[in-house]
Amino acid sequence: MPDLPEESGSAPVRPIILASASPRRSALLKEAGPIFASMRILTSDVEEGNDPLDNAMRKAEAVAQMNSQALVIGADTVIRFEGKTIGKPADLEDAKRILAMLSGRTHDVATGVCVRCVEAGILVRFEETTHVTFRALTPGIIDKYVQDVNVLDKAGAYAIQEHGEDIIEKIDGSLTNVIGLPVERLKETFEYLLKLA
Image (cartoon, rainbow, N blue to C red; front, side, top):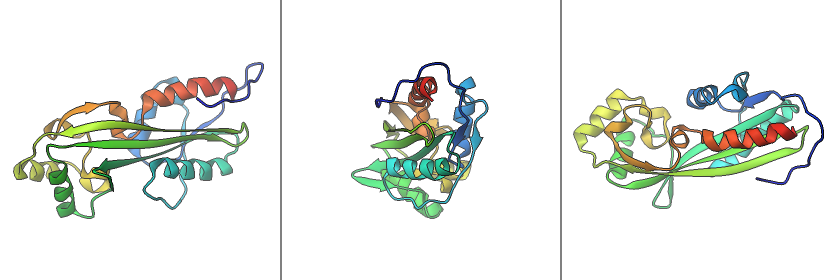
C-alpha cells in the first residue's frame, strides 16, 4: 500500500465511481458490501493498449478529472498466454480458435486496477493475476460453449461464470479477478483509503 498523508478527524465518505461499462464489474462491486452500495458508473472514451494497468489508469484518470471529489475505480482485464495478450475474438471462428489454443493449457488472467481521487491526491494502482487451467476441449465441447455463451464480448472467448465448469479444470488465485475485478484486494484498498479520503 502506498504511503498516503495521515489526516486527523473523520472525513465524509467520498462518492465512489466505477469507470467501466462492464456489467460484470458493476455486479461484483454491488455484491461486495455497503462500501459500494451508492457507487455510480461513468465512462469515458480512452485509447487502450495491451497493458491492463496502464488502461486502468487512463480510465480512472479521465473520469477523476471530471469528478475531482470522487474515488474513481478504473479496471482492465486481459488474458496472457505464452507471452502474448489475447483480447476479444473477432468472430465465432476466431473464438473457437482461441478456445482450442487454450485447451488443456494454463493461462494468466491479469486485471489492472487504479483508484484515483484528484482532490485528495490519491493514486493507488495494482495488478492481480490468476492462473486458469482449461480442460482438454473437444471440437464438440467448443461448439457447444460458443452456442451457450456470448463469447464475442469476452477476452479469451470465455466467461468463468457462464458454463465455466464445462471448460475450466482449475484456477489458482482470485475467482472474482477472472470475472473481471479482484474484489477482495479492492475492498482492502478501499477500507484503507476511506480512512484517509
